[in-house]
Image 1 (cartoon, rainbow, N blue to C red):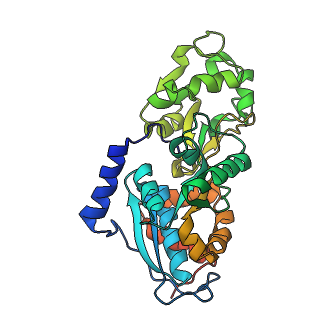
Image 2 (cartoon, rainbow, N blue to C red; image 1 turned 180 degrees about the horizontal axis):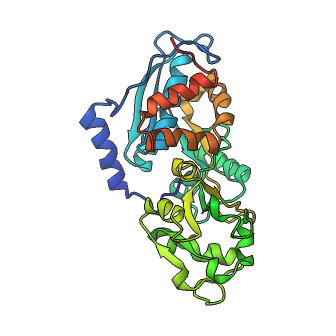
Image 3 (cartoon, rainbow, N blue to C red; image 1 turned 90 degrees about the horizontal axis):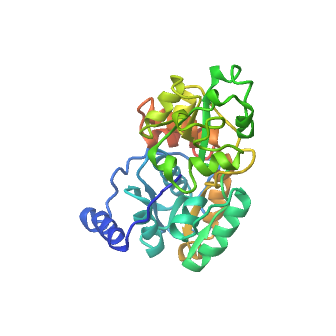
Length: 330
C-alpha cells in the first residue's frame, strides 16, 4: 500500500498521543468473536498472565489483518489488547517501535520507503523483504516471513474488453495496441509522482504526450475511488488500482501482469517488537503458519466482504481463520 507523504515528527507524536492519552490505551473497535481451539494452540510454557498488544492502521485491509492477529494471539494463549485501527502508518509504527504494541502486519515497500527513507522501491519481492528485514533489525524490529499478498499498484482492464484489446494480459503488450486504445484512468498523485504514470509508460516503451504513443488526451484524472467504476464503465481501457482491492473482483476487472517489473513490492508480513519476540519466540512460528495463506485473492475476497457487503472486519477475519482451521467456532 502506498503512502506518498511522511508525517513530521510533531504530527507523529501528536497523533500517537491522541490515541494513547485520549483513549487510555483503549481500542477504537475491540470487538472480535469468541474462538475455539484450532491448529493454533497455546504456546508451551506460556505464563498465565502473558500479554500481547496488536496494532494496525485504520483502513479495511489493515483492520482485517489486525483482527486475524488478535484471534491468532488469543488462540496462542495471550491476553490480547486490541489496538487496531490507528489513524496512519507512522503512529502505528511508533506504537510498535516504542514497545506499546508488540506486533502488526506491515508492507515491505512502505517500510522501505516511508520508514527507512529510501527513494526507490524494489520490484523483486524476496529482495525487498530481505533488505527491509536486515535494515529494520537495527531499529529493534523483527520481520517474520512475508505473505504472497502484494498490495502494490497495478493496471486493470474490464474483463469484457480483453478480447477486443487483442487478449491483453501483460503490460508489455500495451505498446502493441493502437494509440487510440491506450487510454488510462489514474488519480492525481499517480499522474504526477516521480514513480507514477509517466515513468511507468517509459518503462514499457511508451511516451506521455506523444500523439503516436500516449497523447495527453488519453489520460483521465479521477479521485482514487472513482477509478474502479470509471474503468468498469469504459471511460478508459486501463485503470490504476491496488491489487488487493475488493472492487477488482466485484466489478470483474482483470489485472495486467507487471511482466517487466516496474511496480515496487508491497508484500505484507508480521512485524514484531524485537524485545517481545525475544521473550516469546514461538509467536514467529504462529504467524509463519498464517502468512503463506494470505494471497491477493484471499485478501480481495475479505476486503470485498467489508467494503461491498458491509460486514465487520472482525467477523470476516474470524470466518477466514475458521475456514483455514487456525481456530474453531466455540
